[in-house]
Length: 162
Picture 1 (cartoon, helix red, strand yellow):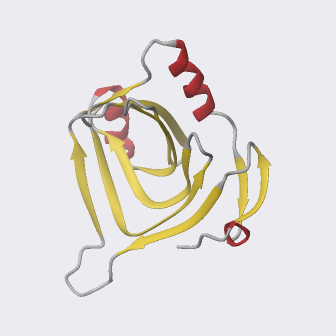
Picture 2: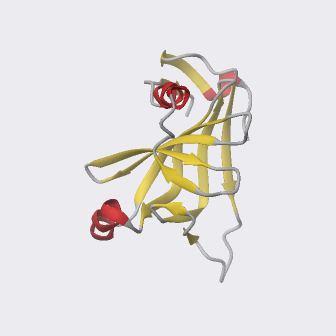
Picture 3: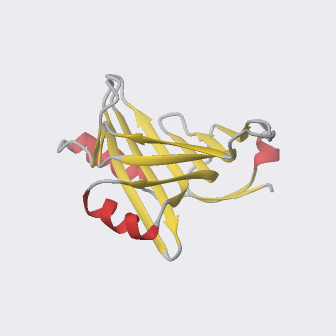
């Protein structure tokens, strides 16, 4: 993990500067007989999601105070397995998860926005995650959630130290 801002961020092009920036690598040892990845299906979410973790995962973790951003993600893939997107991704295969943003409200409700890419397609989805782990696509029909959804989808462009 690298936590010195000057070793993580080269320049903020668009959007606010984070309070803290971390360069994170998560892995398990490459060994004979050890898996190179593992997957699970989240059947509590709507739609259901299949998520695959590769042996090495890297990302930039940005703390903006009121929201957290996982950017430049590598080694994490997934796809919906139910609904219209589930049908589309059953043909396309898993997409590469490239960014995940989230804000947690005082009552434990989490509003998240993730982006995944597959070939020429990019899908961005906003989710509401309840304290009990259930998730659903979109946000509740309350103005405060719409404002938070706009903030989570605001443009952010950062050049990182590689």
